[in-house]
Image 1 (cartoon, rainbow, N blue to C red):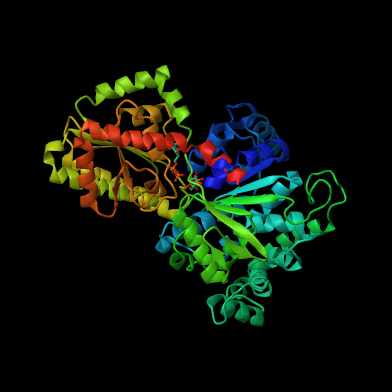
Image 2: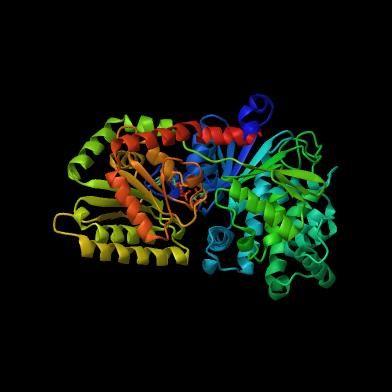
Length: 577
Ligand code: ADP
Ligand code: F6P
């Protein structure tokens, strides 16, 4: 990222000339119906890596944040109340989605198809045409919302796997109808007809699909039949959905006589290619092309993202997997830093995300946190504490963590009663079946291990299945002797960064899964394979018995990295590039 780091000139230009619009599915605030609050709604900070990082980055760069508010409300008055509160207090704009579309987009396609696949869990993947149509519909709603405020010269930065079609739809909506560049009628067709249109798009756009390649064969067959293999089975559903989409496209085609800079293209009515810069960042892994190609709509998702100027990933491996999917599935010529697509070069880069360590330092200085730390230290006097903080998600490897602890206690009975695992499992995506099953599996394991090694005086696992507040989180991180992250796949994992930020005093040990993106950055951690419970048990032993001089040397390396590669550094680097 030498370019990104050194390009302060670009940053200055950004500050003076361009507005930044960030689009993510989740907003930094979670809104709930609450009759005890003014207006009937409560507003609380959201959790999760994306929100933490963007909220951190927001301290250094100003942007409008567009996202789904997470609920639907009964009247337009309610919407207006929420819109005004979000705009005034959080610089956010909500995208209102029909509840069925929101459910099928978020729980259905995003979290039951893309999420498991991108984390190497194809067995949990549940492909369903209705969910795909809802995904398209939601992406289009987001694109329309951006279009209402975007102006020529702006930058739009799209976040994460919920919105992979948004770059294509946005280009088409803001540039398509009077495009002077390569966005053209066939891309409008793609928005209008979705699955059909995209195979047609890829075929007719002169992509370099090698003869006989998968891309060439599929395009040829689909164009010949006029249908993809999926559309024929759900024609009714498709008609309904493409009707909705077609209305939006038709509205766009009536287009832009208002010239007010709000929507229908850009302020001066010129909507040439490149009048708006679009970036995309994926917060999850991008899997090997061997896994990615399982996805029935693998072409459409790639095409959606390729309408960006810059596509970013946490690690070099994820970027490489993306590019090899572009080559193998679409037949595109690629280089290590990008792909040629429709006569343009789409830049692809690595931008490891971070946290704002200062927030944690400031947190640790609060009286409430100090008091809580003292109370916890008294409670666990003479006992070593291992902390785990994860959303209750199957990618976090919580069962693997529990089995490793069980193995450790079995192999080192001298530690029974002298070590505890405090595991915070934040409830997440509870409408998705796999998450409900996971909860039962974890409850069973916690009960079994506590039953096996617990005494009247102590239990080896303290399991907290709810959200804890920031002060409690800081105190827990700070008083723990080790942090255990056993994700079976994880885009980055910010909990590991946060633990390090809170360990100035204790110099605790970070035990980190090799399958978390953070393992490629956090040199100084004990790196483990979470599937090998003996190796993790050994690492726990090593952490608990490590000499303080070694802990200090490791901590110094980790701390330097975390303090340099912050969330603002990540955000400004990407935007500058
Ligand atoms: P993911 O993005 O998969 O959730 P990360 O480890 O990258 O995983 O990020 C988790 C983020 O959620 C961290 O910033 C962490 O502090 C935050 N978080 C974890 N638990 C809570 C909680 N109880 N309340 C609020 N935020 C939390
Ligand atoms: O890390 C991927 C991610 O989707 C983040 O974008 C998000 O912060 C986190 O997982 C939590 O997900 P959700 O928004 O579904 O609660």
